[in-house]
Image 1 (spheres, one colour):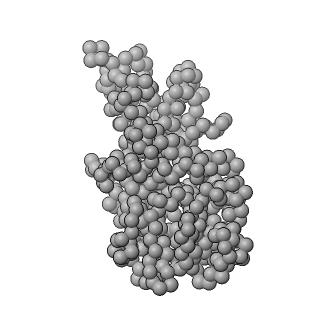
Image 2: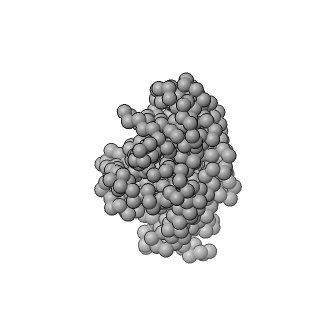
Image 3: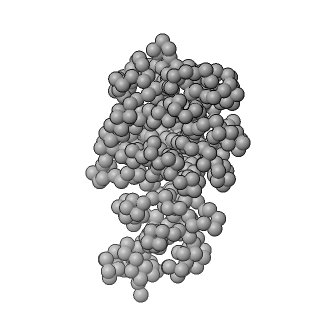
Length: 415
């Protein structure tokens, strides 16, 4: 089997004997040995990975091939991606797959918000595991059916420009939390880097948290030792030749590689298959089943504020999510406005607190209006008034909550 052959197909690899016998939740092809044997690894069991190499050595093609196989073999209920690509061209076609958790990030400042979003997602998952009595994503998903919408997908954060990512000092702290605690929650960080990026990773003490190392051709033996712990990667000749090191296992051979048209077709096909949810509604490019963060057992103490939908509408109108803005627009006290913004963060509408900066929006206006707003208006977490005291909005006919000054559906002020 030639790893760079134009005849290589995703179907042939998926039906390969090594792939069929591979164990784990997300087995993927990694490398082809010199004798033609395919080596497969379970990406779900790999906490984090660094892919290093000089320009043109094949590191980005390798990562795109891994993504192509994941998209081909697993849908958005099993695998999702958060990608930072400063060039904005390597992964732009992934928006067609329906597997992105966020739009591809191309700005280093927004990359910080994406990392914070992942940390918030990690905290939500740990809270869910704790309430359900499980310790990690593996034991949680084991209790669910394979195609159950209640399964939690593994999220792969792929950073294709480490230098600009770590140039913002505030990114290091949340990124360190992800590297230390992400695997049990199903969040995996992959760095694609040159030697300069590796120096930044070492400088910020992140290297020890990355147990999986992939090295393509490097400039010298010192670089090879920095990545792998031994000096041989500088002697790799052809593009695509690589070392794969994870724990005590070391593999040498040709990196798995699929032609660009094969990867692109897999992305388009997955997008068509994932184009509609179970109720027949079209999915937006970054759509995912939203789950309110409150358990039914604690609904009374965690009930959502009745003005939350109106406040979110205001946030999208002004493109600014801050407590002071919610105070001014809805004429609320600070405590209530702050609680509403905190609930927006818990649900995943806005990102975490960033000091004096406004919080970043994490979903699109279309997602809010077509999916999450309907869920909020229909959920029992927003307690309506008793039937005997029900009032209705004169503008849209929506049932009003007890003591409400605004209609939660249309935002009309109630006198």
